[in-house]
Image (cartoon, rainbow, N blue to C red):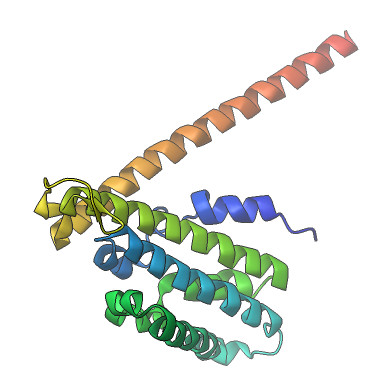
Length: 219
């Protein structure tokens, strides 16, 4: 069966966006989006683990017994999380420190476990790699955008560069994280619903046009 990479991309970034549509991985989303750079760092770390764990799980999907699949998935995921931790600690210690406890917690991140169980364990290597890539992109975009908004409003800066002296401390707080997340989910749902409605309307009009064309041909 031919892999529909366009659908996989759309699902990962829009239709099944892990952060804004499925509302998975909420702990790092709320805790680390005080700055845009934190969002990029966590997003890239999760993307790396998603891609490579998906690939390995897909390769071993027929060899892993169903009874121990979850422990096996966690072991594979933990291996790549360890690689990420060691790499960040050595090459990017500032980002490593900013992520704190949430970096090792990637091991039990619902996004990664969900994709391992629902996709990688049932699909081929290329499709699984693409799924990990686009789910990671969707996650990274959501966290980075939220982080940028909270950093601009809460600290008057972006990527650590001061924009102005004015700031609203609320957006740097825990309450501000929940508020920003709720607004993002609502706006994302509104936009995607509108796009979906337009797509359905366009499809209906195309079908009506084809139907009318068939009637004229048979008349």
